[in-house]
Image (cartoon, rainbow, N blue to C red; front, side, top):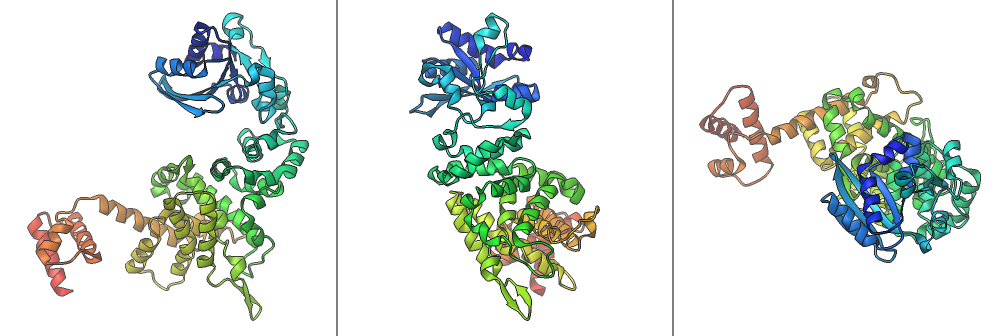
Length: 481
């Protein structure tokens, strides 16, 4: 472990700069936790220095030709972003709290994050002597999350969510007294900024096993604080076609959405790379599309409680998609999500039953496929994946072969149609839309797109190869229409 620290270029550089400035510098927090758990130096490194924090941070960034900015003007915290051996690193520099390392550590969130190492000990003495006033090493060994002090959550209530995130991230359990404090302090969470709450919540969804994290949030009474609308889903029966209550079904839908998106090669082998690439993209802030998809899966039936009706002994939820869309929009706005993100959430929840309706048709025409894809744009992949996960979540047991799920052929067909259409749109046709409108005296509209697709299809089949042939083709088609 000491060799990893001695050979880390960023850590060596920070120590050299601090020594040059006659400063004591400490390595602190998550980097030491991860070093113990994973045996590697993480890309995010935290340093504490006695004074002149800005100057040391700027010297550090300048050494690597990186950048630096102020994280917190009041506390005097700075972040440097650098590259070293092809890897990106962030290095945070902060002043030692009240000039003393022990009070600084005991005022942190959890014991596993309250470890420090004086860099002069390893670089001058060759000693790995951890400063551990809260018993963090023992908690690392016992694999438990424990607050540093009884007032940790009161000092910063977002730590309530961080406890769940770290427990999932490290595969640790939260010790009983910390759980008691979470329940006791839960209402304080709403005193924090919505942006911080949102960011921590979506970071929890990014951890493997999102449905289990949501169950833990619910068990610790935090889910009702974050999403009070969810409470109305609990215990709601859905009728003969569903084996689970509404809330149970929502959690199962989250689970199957994650299974599909983490294993696209099993479900949609032809499109696995495109699906992986799409859902790994960042939609806004630090929220990847996969986390947003899981969030939508949790909320997709949020409109059912308000639309539940029983007729002739049968439960119905007519209009739950529209009602759910309105509720989800309010939730998304409360979470301070961007308009483009809210549009995707709204579209998916409003349209998530459409693929099932297509399944009920005796024959699915090209027109029906294109109309559905048009109507669920810009959330095509989110809607189709959710529809399949939703169908899977109604069943007691899921077969080993997803192809045997009744809705699967419809979803696979729609994905084929979507990706082929997208591929066609990326091809350059022999005639542009402007050329077609000028030649045929047409206005801009859906017909132009139909004619361009006709040209591309004929070109791929080898029927045409010049602009003149393309014009003759569509002129004949236009006159017949």
